[in-house]
Image (cartoon, rainbow, N blue to C red; front, side, top):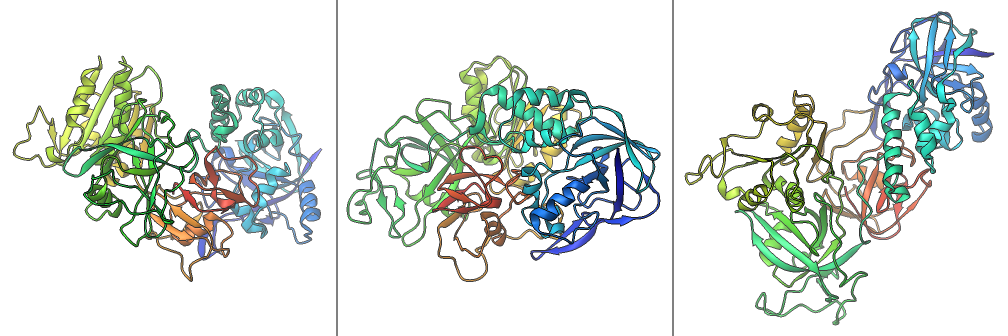
Length: 628
């Protein structure tokens, strides 16, 4: 019979860690006497990060005495006290490879149900003084598990845990933990686990994503969809290849498009710093081409001259932009806005008032020039289906949804399609005629354009429909279809407010997908008081290692062995990052590896998607470009 050895509680507190402050409830201590267990936690207990811990499905954390003995021997520790692993119940018995999801136990007056394994989190490592603890708990198959409180009541150390019901399907805690975090996601086991009513919603969502991945056949190349569901499909080629500029066209006063085709093995010239530089076509700029670094042609990259694979509608292309003389080349990503297939890529670029890269391309790029480009990337893509589609954009945000509109028109889709766009006036309205023509090819299309400051020559009812900006009130008044697949892309103000408002509105769209130009939002669980700081090179002398480029942040720095991982370097530069375990388990840090290769230490428990890297446990093997 299992026995409750210790009841452990602790309120959240602020802990100093790596120059930051972490608000955490992982510090638990044993208490004596009876304690009341409520629906969300035990009397005197609390969780610091309610996004990752706590809630009715994670009210009480259990860890076993046998696992204490295991870690004492493995880590060579003799200082482990009850509550050391952040658990509320230290128990004798109930091993993870025997307890099943859905099992129910009575303790004192209370009744509990097993809902999921422990959440992988860096804070257990913080408490243990062992940074790799989150990965060790999974790889040693000793995670511990959470309980839901079915009946509130008093509990006390020394009481027995009496099993009163067995979970259906007989999937153990250790098995379901391995099913999500370790390689080999058995479709049969996933289906079994998803039949368990007691399984927590978060785990249910992750396992369903893995089951969908097993059904779509993407396999290992797609990474772990249960942990990083919004990954891009594998890139069509590695690194950069030269593409030739076929056309350049103005789309509005500030937006221009560049159409690229295979370069057919054309050589690249070099800038003064040795970085590749696209040559102008003969006579295109009225002057001679600069020589390559060694005076001769640069060798072609792998894949030169081959046909361009079709990009998915909504993806982007990463470009190495030549520098002004004497400067370093720049890495920028631009959305593809053209039709699918056809062997060409069309980029649409906004020339920002002080944009170095866009300004250079606008001033110097000519037809026939060659640009080095990474393969199309991005998970903001049109999903196939029969339901309605709502495409919402403003400004340069029209580019990825234009590619989606091209795809729908090429398919002569019968889906209900809404095109909602916002601009300042007609001079800043790219793709106006093109989008109108594409919508005209669709049987069930709707269009509404807002100008915030119409020019005197702009015609209401023809060029635009309403004065002002896109807003939830406006969208609700248009009669948008409920349950539509909705895609939103635009300037920061639009992206900050509208997607969240849509999710919480009466429109109830089934899916709201967003694309953010520039760096995405950070995820730094438990860290408090962190200020938003512009990206910058790290403090101290520059490193002497490979170049690390953060493409979305527009920063390139040299690697230094002073950092344990690419994540640490990104943090030193205040590049926005996402992470949780910091040991290669949770995949929150998974990022696109646009060029280069990395070494891992420790090795991730399950590999990232092809073309991605886990930055929390990797270091650059050579120059790398990250989609951060």
